[in-house]
Length: 223
Ligand SMILES: Cc1cc2nc3c(=O)[nH]c(=O)nc-3n(C[C@H](O)[C@H](O)[C@H](O)COP(=O)(O)O)c2cc1C
Image: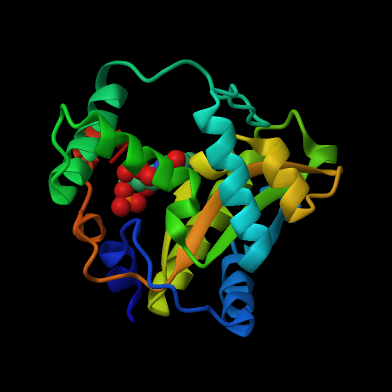
């Protein structure tokens, strides 16, 4: 695929076929993703690629704790809840997803099911836990670099026919992830990325999220 085709075609995938993803293919994708730029080439990122029984234990642990009302415990600052245009965009994409899935606004059960799906990593066969070196904790560069590698990863995966969704839901219960993925103490958990072969029949996978126009985002100076 051409670069534009990959970037413009990629979208988050929230329904997967159960088929396994070969380790060699994931290694190939990671090698491409790791060409991402990083602050002074520090390459603070690491990847715990989880499948099978350990991933099922994470799904179960996340589900149990979220249903029990255990407060989320992410390992980075999350700031305050979205407001104004950020909240509008959050609601906008949620409406697109619920619309595609035929989930009504007042259907509390199906809305709850949808949320729990995220805590199960969307039942994907693979979950990549993205971490960074704790020695860099406190610098905003390390999370920035993780964003760069995550973006490269999802596009590299897409170019090979694999779907992904970068997500916070999978790492909200970080002790569960730490235990079952065996995250080393010198790593900070940054994000999870569900990965697998897209289920083309899953309606939400067809959703193309909106973007604000370049004219709204960019200020050109000195042109
Ligand atoms: C940092 C980050 C966290 C995200 N967390 C979640 C999540 O917890 N659950 C989810 O369904 N999608 C999550 N997403 C996916 C976004 O909703 C999605 O990228 C956005 O709506 C744009 O849609 P697109 O990826 O299809 O272009 C996350 C994406 C990013 C970059």
